[in-house]
Image (cartoon, rainbow, N blue to C red; front, side, top):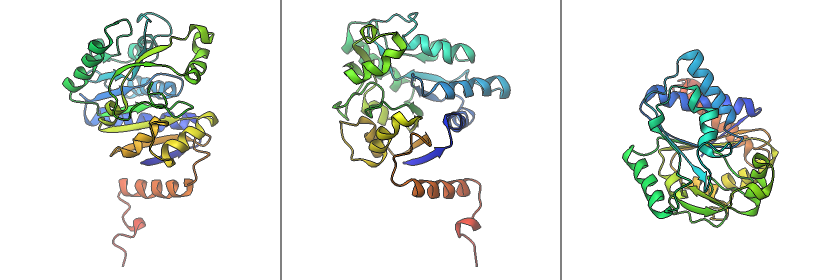
Amino acid sequence: MRVIIEKNADAVAVRAACFVAELIRRKPACVLGLPTGGTPLGLYRQLIRLHREEGLDFSQVTTFNLDEYVGLEATHPQSYRYFMQENLFRHVNLDPAKTHVPDGLSLDFESSCEKYEQMIRAAGGIDLQVLGIGSDGHIAFNEPGSSLGSRTRVKSLTGETIRDNARFFGSEDQVPRLAITMGVATILDSRRCLLLATGPGKASAVRSAIEGPVTAQVTASALQLHRDVIAVLDEDAGGWLTRRECYAEFERAQRLLETGQWRELGIGKQ
């Protein structure tokens, strides 16, 4: 796993946007997996800026969101479809027909979840899955104890997740208790994962995900099994990592490699 520690949340957003924009420019018809919540807002602001100021073209991009609350209409202010519409979709030239969010109103959970999996496969799979991380180490709504082989399904939310999300609803009582979520295995099928975390409240979860054992109790730890993961953290979120110096050295070498500074890497020196 490539671990990048930036100074603050703004720098995380800029760096993450570079990875997304590079993919879109290299593969205009790419497939993006997208999250909601507070962490990706800076990324979405940067992508909007790149679209407006540098002409970043989303017209051929397909998107799949990680999850949606059960029982909320797309127009509900706290639905994830509404979140994406307000914070990204309506500000760039995405084709609405190519933006996908799980159907929170369908009560035929098995059928609608399998349909979502089929749509991802039909699109050619997800090229880049952007992820946040919960304070208990979950990704999407794969709460502690979720199967690491899970697929898109309905999940009950834990008390901790309900408390974390209550700030968006006004009170815990208004937070839905069920959500449709991509499974851990669905996420691991992505060609690349981009994990974002900011703030001291994520430090414990980040350490468990990156340096702890792979366990269903911290579903983000399954990313250790993925072939291509980039974690972009701010200083606070990365504050509990024990190998920070190693990650910084690895990242320095990666930068030199990407810019062709071979001699600095000891290649070609006499």
